[in-house]
Length: 306
Image (cartoon, rainbow, N blue to C red; front, side):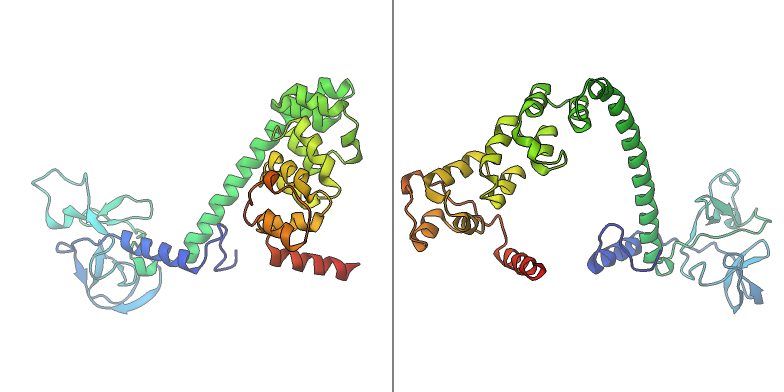
């Protein structure tokens, strides 16, 4: 994984917050009882790199460089279970935190140990982000496995209806628990057959988001007012609001409908366009449902393709 990638969409300020959090969480511990030595040339027991340093941590003839064990004591803590108090000596009271989180008593250790540094300056945020990426990958893997298992179960439940002649998307909708009467009303209707089964309007019924009667109403004005129909499908506006707008005089003016969806107030849009409308029947505006700048750019790009 490349450095500075952000699997969770984190920006630089998020990374800085993470770095600050890591720094604040690093413990600092008293080292009054830590044995230090001046071995001259030595190989660090943690990073396995040859060093020449003075006053370095010594654990049973093994030394740990100043980069791995901070001179101020980061990485040391009281070592439990070494010898019963009050018989502990200074050497037996303190230990070095190991890579597995346990502590190794300074007085008892006779083996080579590896120290997990807890110095904030040595923590690489990129490594933390990479670990987040690994966690995300594991989560996605489990989600995909669960979804595959769920789909297999739904397919089995839908199989009887598919064998009876119902199309798979409709059968799966019933298996998922969508109101079967709504699914069958849509299946038995003719109007939807002009669309593929994965059309957003059809899918909205099969997901239980709209009833068949509501979808039928949307379909009635979808041809002349595709933007308004889409807004109804995704529930940016209510279908009742849409029919009020159209019935009050906007039905014959698709661009005026778009003006309203871009944030215009219906009475003012009608007045500017010199439209004859039923002002008393007009619904209130709904704010900016469509970004007018983005809409203009999309239309320009579409014209360029044509």
